[in-house]
Length: 186
Image (tube, helix red, strand yellow):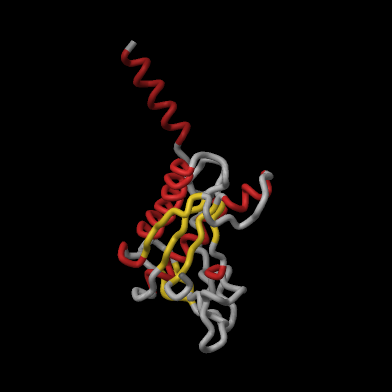
């Protein structure tokens, strides 16, 4: 029996082996820029460890113009909206928070105030606590992405500073937010 298994193993291995007929020449290498090469005039920094390339947020801006007030800059967007009774940052706002974290990381003297807001539903105490959780959630994400603790302050305004008046879902949705303000704006 053992001899039969050995013979079958040898036959199987012999059937699997192949003899190369001819060796191929190695493929040639072209010298060209990578796909998606940057456009003329765009400025990027060298690739960081981990393969992440930093982006200059001020590229294409007028001298003296602040990216914080330029309507074409993501940094001019300052509100993060939430679902009812939620304080987690939705995926659609994570890029916004990342851009502000990058700005704070690159501008260590910049200071930010995050105001957590709620709609009018719920008790005053509940809304103040929910607004604080919203502001603290944004602050925590900013710090994880490179901002320094002393640069960011989180406060709750609860339902005291509505963006929209009324008792409709449309108005409530505009009031469930965190607002980002930089020093000199508050």
